[in-house]
Image 1 (cartoon, rainbow, N blue to C red):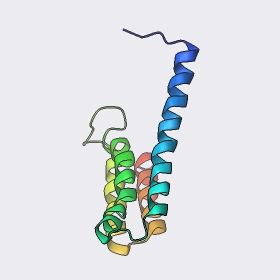
Image 2: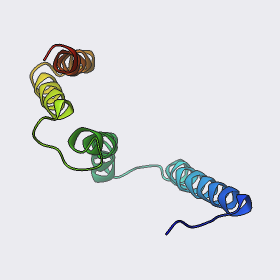
Image 3: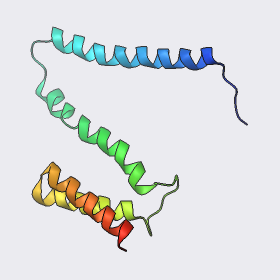
Length: 111
């Protein structure tokens, strides 16, 4: 059952989400500007935020590229596994990208 939304509702949602996003980011900037010593546990925990966000963005595109989970015949999954192995072995972002993309292109165009 498709819902009909007017342009005012759509723009209202976009502006509200933009204000919420700005408020969340601004609160962290304001908070860390007022705190002299950030606890070590918080600094340690914040180091894991970028990899967690990247994984949350990348894993659905790798595991379910068509909207459903595809483990067999999924060249993106195999390329992701090769890229993960490359980053585990060499710990280099450029080598990870090259390994993953080379595997993906090889599987798509050669195999």
